[in-house]
Length: 326
Image 1: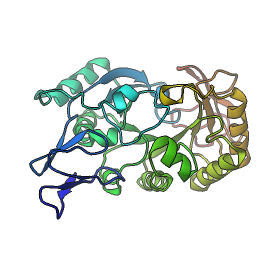
Image 2: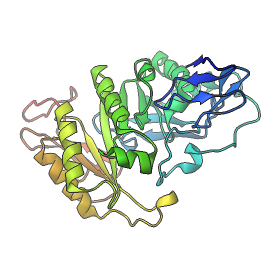
Image 3: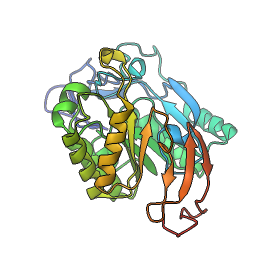
Image 4: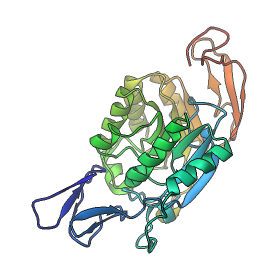
């Protein structure tokens, strides 16, 4: 997804908000695309660096096929520069690319593996699927041909053209902060772009869940959490919000782990502003991951880690007690 520019041999990448102008012989910011003689080449097509059969709750998705297993694929590259990235060896691979293109038939081979694993869905995750868009699209077509839904786990900073083109049933989108300053200095992105793409995904009837990693002193103030949760509630009171605990990592090793009390405070603020489904991640505590009926208070799904027990949820996705759609 690119186009030539007015400059001799230069091209403009159309995958994300950066719209990199790439001179001949150079790469875009994500390092996953290179301009070769006026043609933009994907360096990570077929370059599968992470592959697993995961519980869908690990994405995390709690309201999309709960209790199912998803065939999860990651290729290297990312268009963000998060200081605390937990997968930085995958997301920022530098110049470490294969010397030859991916072998022919890799998409069909992975489709066969997914069938053997009896996956319930396919997920593009671990890094940023936007920067392996063509690979994800071709894999997604294979998933759909098997009758399986496609999931994207993403930072939400793809271009409008990408989000309106991808074939996807569900997304977990990081809403890292409700401060553009945080996005620019800590993540290397833009809040406005992420917000626009959350809204575009919802408008396309894609199932959306949101994750926010709380980092002490950076994005966990009461004021910011008020703004963030009011924004989400304005989109839908039923949008699931996953509030995750930060642990020191990568270039943020000097920042201590987020206190569990901060997660509890965020949940309190979110509930006050009307959000009905708030989950606390990277922490253990009673009820942190349970799904409760917002109408009658019945425990519908109990979770302990990635082990779940569907207690009172009907096969049609309603509370068995009061028939509220969940």
